[in-house]
Image (cartoon, each protein chain N blue to C red):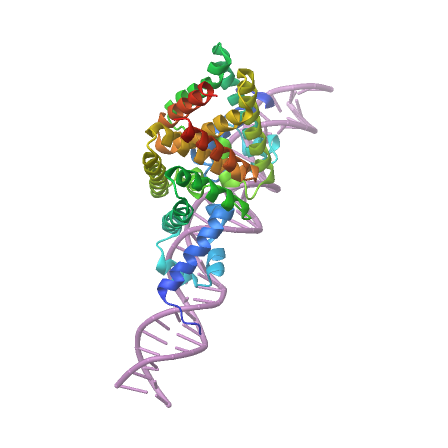
Length: 186
Length: 186
DNA sequence: TGCCGTGGAGAACGCTCGTTCTCTACCTTA
DNA sequence: TAAGGTAGAGAACGAGCGTTCTCCACGGCA
């Protein structure tokens, strides 16, 4: 028998749940499909998580951390504060290149589960305010006014959804171009 | 007995479906709840529509027309081409004031049903390309380059989702401010 | 070796869904 | 009045869901 700790099983479930929920939306993924994908028994699944809603919540929290870390890699690669702001659109363009890019998982979850789950709504609001804050901090470092940060955040959000819907990285590039203009002309 | 034609019953079903699907997401609304809300028998419901997926599709088509007409009212009220472009953000700010504003119904439907329904995906793409085209036409009338139209469209999209998530018209106003800046400085 | 406790496999449960079918009441028309 | 057809109410059905329970195999330990 392959030995796996609860921690490892937890991570396998979260990884599978994140992937499946994002690709197919939460209500389209059954707990049994999840169990099979994670290679875990149904008993253990319910022993590790309080239920589907709690699982969705944890998946979103985990994804928030993962995305933050990944975008950081792009941001820290840049030298000037301006280039750091623009780097988040490079991350988006690269991400949209991968198959099955489906836009912002938080917006998607809010659309599907927001009306019925306060916990999901709370995590989504938290992520959005985090992204907004991160962009605001970078823009502040450039010395531009705060409304520029607001604008770039909204460009980012609009590009995320439309990059998914059009299945093209064009919106990401258009948003980056607009952000560059805003930074250069203020 | 109250006499109702099939056309009237159809419209009642579509109105109820649009309202409920938008407020609670499609999978959270059962056909029986819909039947009760529309005041129609289950038999007639299935006689008027081929099934739930077809109903969602028709609801989105109908909403696309309705939103186009409503925003037109705002646009035509404005005198200059620049003010016409900015008027769509007035529409958004006003709409978000109504209770139960949930952002863009097309983005929401894409998030929930896009992976499982090609028909829904097609309607969503159609609506997005329509909005993008309408903004492009208005921006072209101002003499600004096309990338300005792309930017304003993405600002619009980002503001739609974040106006819903933050339950505030602030993103709509921020996007309008950014759009005004883009128009004035190009 | 015999016992106990843990854990996995998957059957079972209760519920809700989308969809169809049955039955009955009523209106129309001859 | 009698017959026929239409439409509504809602029961029925099969499937799938989230969740729980049963059963058994297997390992550690006295």
